[in-house]
Image (cartoon, rainbow, N blue to C red; front, side, top):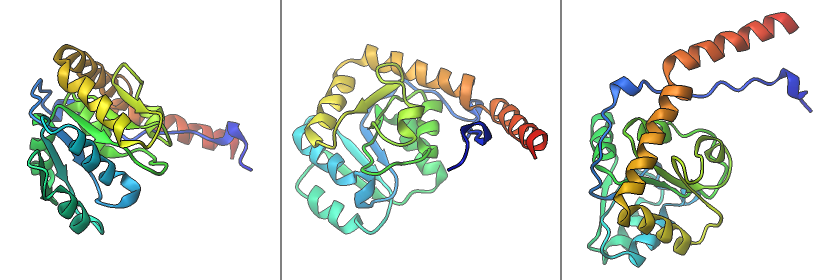
Length: 200
């Protein structure tokens, strides 16, 4: 019921100069709450289909025990539990890509911007704010379904094509500089307040 002309979107931001872009690609990373709605079990099932690809699962939550149980027979999966900010930063810098196959409408996960700042493409669900942040085929891959097989295929494409992964990583970091940097956030916030004052 809110008129469209009264709505302004101010994206989150991250300072790209505070993050180190890296061409490393030692594993596929999931970082987030270990909850069903985040799609973490689909990451585990994708790892089962790709035994030659290492996976790191970072986070804690209600499904941590289930994630550990399902990953127990997968030597290519490391479940770290919760990490502090420095630990997550190190994981992002060394990752091949970020996998975020949310099963619900994620709004604007900060970890996407942090992955972009590290020059990492993001594989995510085509829903919610993820579809607005990720340009399919440019700085990441958007999944058409919640099928772990589709997620595995997207991961394999980036794992097996370092040049493609690097190109997407450069585009990801450029997206931070052009749209999600502090200066852009500040200008968008000022514009939103100015609009509100004019129309109050």
